[in-house]
Length: 368
Image (tube, rainbow, N blue to C red; front, side, top):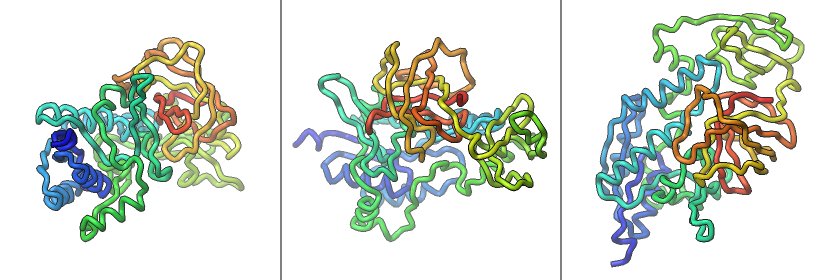
């Protein structure tokens, strides 16, 4: 019996096509595979699909209810960030605090050697550095490495990403080949617990005591331009839905929760020369050199990246942002872009790359 045939892998089965095909790929290689479906307490339709995948592929499917933890760590964080005038990134937090945390714990309890998911990203072991390195997926359109910047050596030593070297086209073709195409298997959603993508309604449902607190739209000089419906209804860079009569469009430049004001400006006022990020984590588990580094910084998932100079700052004062535990650095960073970037958004992740390798990232406190 080969080593692979003796190796057990626990796959995070979401019910989506990506995790289904990842599971099939592991079975084809000879791994002994089990699935784990994580219930988060919100009405998503993945469980029925996960059952169907497990049945079709003839693997055991374990189920874990983390409803209370998910609400505290992800849903409450999501709501509180919006109410504080920041734009959250729940997928990054969920991956670190929920998905990979519980996959590893369940793998240990059930005797599995490795864990796997359907993410489009890659892990490579560097013999010289004796470190596991995280790389973007081969499919640039579907690459999900941005959402995994909080992972460190503890996780990567046990993770397999079967889809990392495949394109979405290949994944869909494989699903049909495996007979998985006769069900309406869904693609993974960026915010799985808000299936209709109406985050404003979600916030109101989570906080039934919340009363809209209208305030002023103002410009950079604090001149009043109009009235807003509550700061949680807006995000940096937003243009639509402002309802401010003007010959040229306004954009959201800043959200001031203390003043309950939304600062607006023209398109050319959106640019920032850099940013400050805190709660920084590094995939290697090592702190950044005192002299800083050069890297490409992505300031949102679909951002193409900006060449940047990154310098360490003194230890952070403790921003109210989620903090990674693996590879966490107690210093923030100052990021200077080689060219100004639009819509630097507090609360989003700034993720640092060298080529297609993920170095780490942190949470944006403010643009410069």
